[in-house]
Length: 263
Image (cartoon, rainbow, N blue to C red; front, top):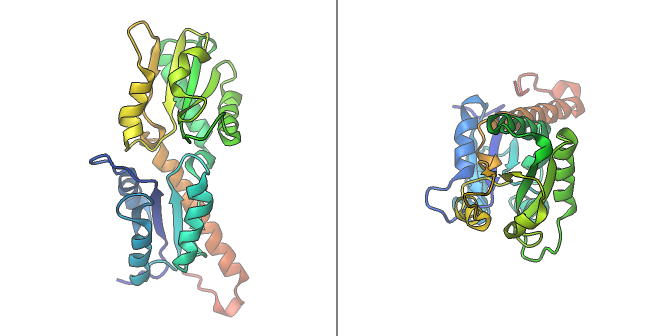
């Protein structure tokens, strides 16, 4: 069957050493039924490796229209430097690339709705609650990054009565010190993680060390939320449509393929 007119959606994640941890594959399987083209997972630090996946797709003739979805929750080195280098080395610098998940339109409203629902379930007031955004971080960090602060401010703008703090699994400010960072009785802990690795499954609960008297709720990692794939799908479809429309607009009139638009 011809692949002409289709766009390949490539889900790229960091990678995990945890058995059965496959966040990129999980997302690919959720998006595939609604996407016109292949939806393929790849990892930058585990298997299937990104370079090999790109080579396979090129050999199959499925990279003319390639849309990369970085399943990352910050615009760090892997997204801003290593990913473009890998694409360029594969001859795929033309690939479309979405923003990391936290930069997608609709991400913060999605988080706000989830938090409001959690407050109702717990019967907590936002004014009595501190939200801890748990980021991966880096061992070299001595303070929150500007990107982390920006995300916290965006959430606080939507939920102004709630106190919002950033903590890191690696580096400062550390998740282990969360008790020193709040004077409110209720606490919500939101891992800004894909959710398939050892950090979400083991490190975060161990660092929190919640005990009986702690009024705290550890929420599911945002990458595992059922409401996230539709947002990613919508943003990917919009990106693909805009790119194809622009390409057709820039072509000489006689060479345009009016059947090539992504629907």
